[in-house]
Length: 448
Ligand code: GLV
Ligand code: MN
Ligand code: MN
Image (cartoon, rainbow, N blue to C red; front, side, top):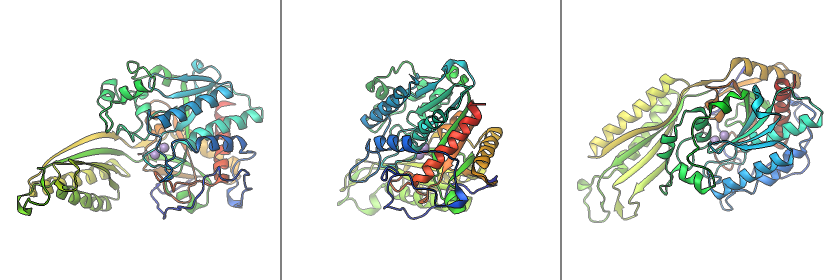
């Protein structure tokens, strides 16, 4: 195994990148260093990918708006149900709206589960989430096609609301299941229209009274493996199609409420203003500075302004900070530094400031035995001894589950390094190599 760098490399977005469904044939591997596990036809992958591609895609931006419990999300869920049914798998929706497709008896225990999510960030890419779900069904097809005999139940899962784009909390479906989000807390999560998460689930046809921890369901699982598009360029730089995850950086979301006084933009003298936009803007710059100093990342990517009029000084500027660091100390340092700076700027402008931590996920070390097993399988399948083992700053349902079950992740090369954007990309033959890698891993775990 080789230890790679975290998923924070960046390259200019390749706006011209086309989806892997664009061509129908799978090109032969062009990179002799990286021949993925074979044989994989890729046919089932392509068919599924093509079906999913139009769902929730915004015609102007080309990005995906598959937000939890919306119409686009319902279409994705219907697609998942149809995939399960067409393969004769046992289909279930759990109390938190997560979808499951089972080969074998789901209640037998010690199951091997794979999957990811189908929802997206606002104007997200096609791969973050769906690549893992589609690859899971394709890997199952591959194994069945070559007559694999399963000795453990195999589950495929689509976790609900992984991105938290609508209700602000990432991995809501897996957090509820793992008991890391209580039903009471879920009732307090609202979207921009004031609709709560349980209300949205009810509107989508689910029972809002049922939501909550589901330890029995988790107890069925002996191992969980999530395949995901890489959200950086480590694999591109190392020349590998597929890598294994080592850890997820600690990360969280903080809401900064700067409260001032609404007033007329034309008639209020500058000295008389209590304008919350000013300390907010200074805080954004401080976040960049503090992150650089701490070797971490910090982003204000979402803002809401009241009353939000061009000719009105705002009364409230609410900004959401997303911050992540390689360890807890650096994360504490960067967030502490940003909050201290924000309070100083707010005071200087006569502005009230509240800072609320809305979510937090501590550092996740994936199960070492399972991680090493994945690396061993890939090394054997690839016929080369080095499989990159990568840390990442991105959150995943696998990270949430890792507190309850042995969990591991596979990453598939993304040459743009871009994610949470329409420029996110993985090449056709890399996706197919990912399916082959996942099939090899599942065979090793579930068919011995
Ligand atoms: C989810 O993709 C996250 O890292 O926020
Ligand atoms: Mn994501
Ligand atoms: Mn994801």
